[in-house]
Length: 242
Image (tube, rainbow, N blue to C red; front, side, top):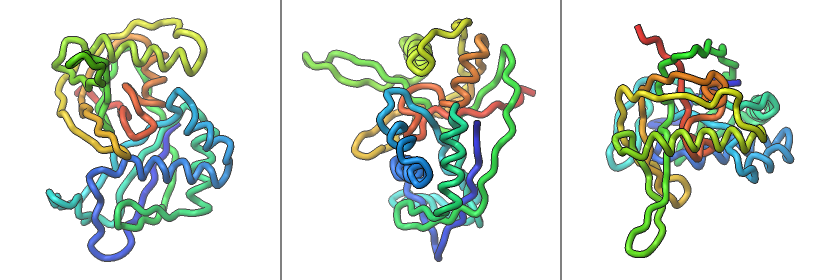
C-alpha cells in the first residue's frame, strides 16, 4: 500500500538539505504515534523494516552545493509505502491531525495525502528506484570487521542483494516464499552517499529488470529492496520498458 504526500513549503526561499532521511523518518513515526503509539513503537523496535519512503521529489529546483536544494515549485512530493494497511492508515490520520513538518530550516504543510494505484507485477518487470538501494556486507580490514557498502559493479553485490531480500521476507512472514527464484539485470546505476543520523550509507539509484518470483517482487515493492528501508532506502516504482 502506497501513498503520496504533497508538501507545501512555508516561507520565503525554502531550502531542502541534502541529508534529510532521518528527519523524514522521525516525522513518519511521530504521525503514526499521534493515532497509535503502540504501532509507532513497533515500527521503531522491529528487526524488520516495516515501511519505506522515497526521496523528496522537487520538480523545479536549484542546487546549492554547500547548502542543499532551493525549492522553486509550489509543492514537493513524498511517497511512503508499507505492507501494513494499519501503518498507512495511522500515518494518513496523523497527517490530518497535524499536517506540519519541519525539515532542516524549512517548514512544510501536508496539503494533500492520497493513495496510489497498485501496479501490475508481472513475471518480468522494470523497476526504477525512488530512493537508493543499500546493500552491505562485512569485510576484514587491518584485523577488524568493517561494514562495507556494495555497488552493482561489484561481484558480490547480487548474491548479497538476493540474501537480504529473502531474509527480510522470512523474518516478516515467518516462512520462505513459495517461489524464491529471481534475477536482476541492472540497466544503469548511480552511486550516492547519504547521512542518516550519524552514519553515512552508500547506495545506488538504479534502473533494473527484475525477473522471477511475484511474491518477492510485491514484498519489495511494498517494503523496498535492500537494507535500512525504513530510513528511506530501496523504494522502487514500475516503469514501462517501451
